[in-house]
View 1 (tube, helix red, strand yellow):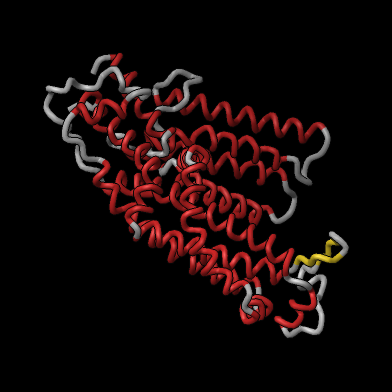
View 2 (cartoon, helix red, strand yellow):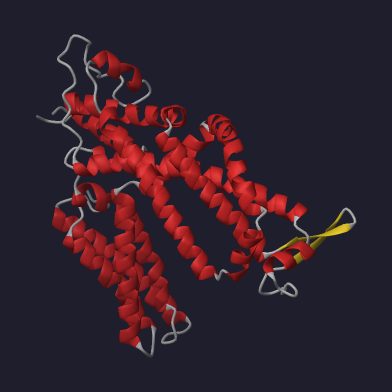
Length: 391
């Protein structure tokens, strides 16, 4: 591979990461692709935990000297590892393995060991456990590109806001017909009155799991089809504005033959589609919830609420009963109103998710823009495998 091809390949792989699809990279490696992107974050964690030397064991100038010694130790360890790896002294690592991870835990344990007078072993174990959790969470976020994925998904919602609004308006009459009966039902308010917050969150989790299952079935159904291209003329329009725009093969070249998506790559594409669609459905649920919060605030009076909940009076602390004076009367904001509105919102979101999955017209309108962006990434992958990946 020429130097120009290597640079082009690196640019394309960084583009995959920015799209939230790092698993489309050929031979995606934990040591070379994931941990190297995590390295600056892990370095920041080590630096921040150096401030733990400002404990109760040292004071005054001794604390400053201990902190500066920790900084010097961190930089020295970085230089030594680079020397052992045969890299220039200040070069960011092109591979991260066991030595770097061991240093991560050792360097973060030292400030706790020298900064506290009492319970030193317990504090060290606490810091090591916290850093193990940070490492695991950071690995998952980095390996699956969750941060750029969320950024991409939110951008999709913003650019498709008009389409989402039109789609929501089409389904709004059904959603309102379904939800209005629940909202004006005394039993629903009594259930909300008896609900404790832990039980409510359990119900919310069950509804989210059911909705997630419907969305996942929908996105997995289209993931494989998006990766198929029969000719380069179909690929070329998707590559405009991408790093591979200048290296797309000619139309008379052999057709695209990128390997089928592996399990991780297929899961990454499905997860991207899932997150994007879930954010859109969540937006609809939040709109319905906000509507009923306002509607209930304006229509449900305290006397009615007391009758519906079979309570002699509302407790300001337990029921979050806040009274707002407006237009010569009192509006009341309560825990029951929040729970009923949230319940209707999440059930409406579930109904909307089912409608999107089962209705062909809704599904094509709802997913068209979202799948076009993913189709673009898979078109780039086809060029990437044909031109830039060594055979």
